[in-house]
Length: 367
Ligand code: GLU
Image (cartoon, rainbow, N blue to C red; front, side, top):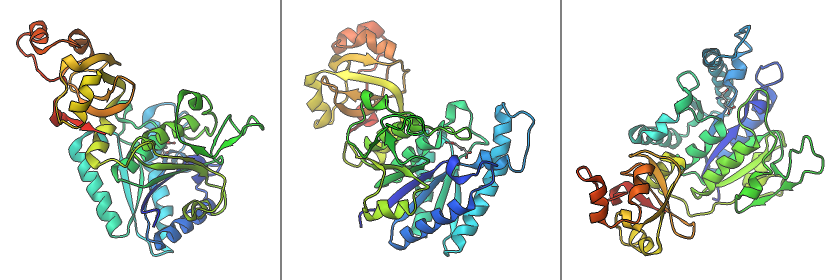
């Protein structure tokens, strides 16, 4: 079977109506398609938004411009959301489980493993995990920001083959299709570059967080984790069935740019500080890739971004190719001082407390 494990993400604009009540017609058809998918043997995980919006149908604040209000709405709405999913799936004799996560569950290695094990167990017992961000406890530093990002990280965590992001438009266009009638649907994406990112417009809604730019960022993450992503309109009749059966349909497919990663590689990926990298010289590529060696300051030609000791960074070859990921023993500032230095010279700069490796091989994964 082509699709073994699939993460399907639905946004607030699809699951709720204008008046913030849940759109049960949409959800009925969505749940029915997933039930069919499960019958074919696929393991499915759902990432659903809609908690904050549904909360508004039962709890009204005069002004809800502060975070506690949104968190209270999410707390009320999450129960409403789960109740509807549970009822609809029970008509197909499928059990569901509520899973609420924050970015901390991905950052902390122990939580990461525990979460993955629980999800594996639920799927082994044919339960569908229904996942949302834990909006009640999440604060800025540990927030995913939007559920597109959460769904991408989740897909990598469970080693999914595909991520399907359902939204209000048919896929990724050359411009916002709701504003520009000439905008064209891009059906296949094999490389996400700066030019493509400029097209990322639209699919924002008043009630939800992610727009097309966050969908593309999610797809970039999954592509680099070896996972295929589809962006499609949830309102398109039987869209899931069409995608899964390979029937011709309007959507955008973003192909993986690498082989599927191992769980350890995926965990490292989820740790990397955005925009931070160490660039190494040509002589260092082979010892790192095949020799199982640590990265020494002498092999470093440049440092990108601002990071602290202990942060995870990308390791990039001299021609821009991503070689691996690792936890740096030095801050970007300190690495700047010792890049290219042989060990004795680097040792002179730092004296006591000097660590020979910029990244130790035990704290590194090669991709
Ligand atoms: N977690 C939020 C909710 O359920 C939505 C986040 C998003 O729109 O991406 O309401």
